[in-house]
Image (cartoon, rainbow, N blue to C red; front, top):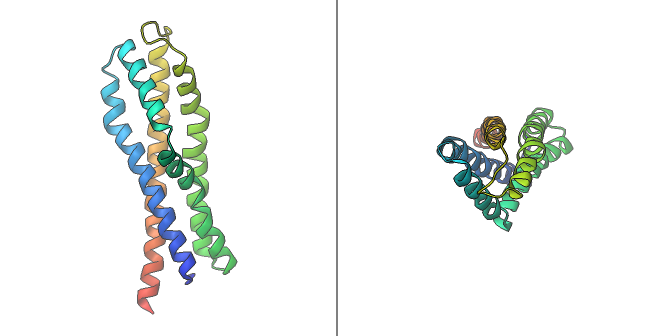
Length: 167
């Protein structure tokens, strides 16, 4: 088990950021998105446009990009110490997060958000509900993936603490 303070700090930071984003996606998936399925087209488009404007801020950007980047750090630090199990564990977490959360967001949710930003709330396209449903489906997938990554990170971080306590 890697024992450096830098490695332990990287584990805690990556886990915290993954937890922040897993919580964010979870809250949206279980509360906000289901509530918004009860809105008519005008209400849905206007609300989603405001949410998309509000979420584009520095705090969210740090959490969003940090959660995609930080898991690579403990993987690299463990590999540098030739500690292959934790290196591979973090590599799996980082890769899963990148593909199933970051990439899904960039290739599914963001393009839908960008298209939705151009819609007039009073006159949305006829297929607005299909776009909403596709966005929600992708959000469920990235929520599940983000939660799995967080649990994996918790496990890897707890293993570091358990190994240190056993010494």
